[in-house]
Length: 127
Figure 1: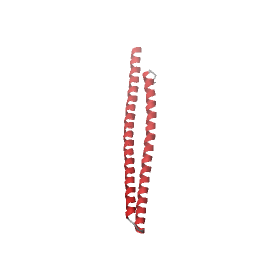
Figure 2: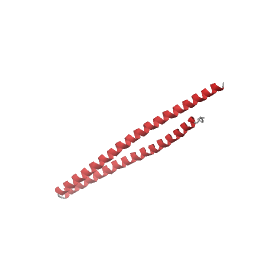
Figure 3: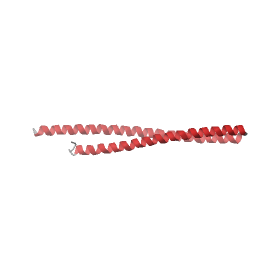
Figure 4: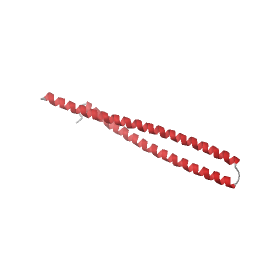
């Protein structure tokens, strides 16, 4: 009778541990996806920065070679539009990074909570 109770308790603890282990694996998977997304965002940020520098250089070369009031107006508007686009893209990138970093912190908290629960189960206190 006592042995049967011990087996049931051990089976319940094993099930609890397996559930916690699955949750840990899901969190690890989410963390990996977030890290990959952050990497792609950093690459996009670098790409937009490179494009910004190229565009700025092109406009400077044009402004040196292209004279007159209408040329100045066109170049100024082009540069202004490009600056606006660049700032908008950088803002979106920054917002996305912020969201992903918040998710990362939340996943770390969940992971820590699961690890404590696993330790409880291993100590036999997973009630």
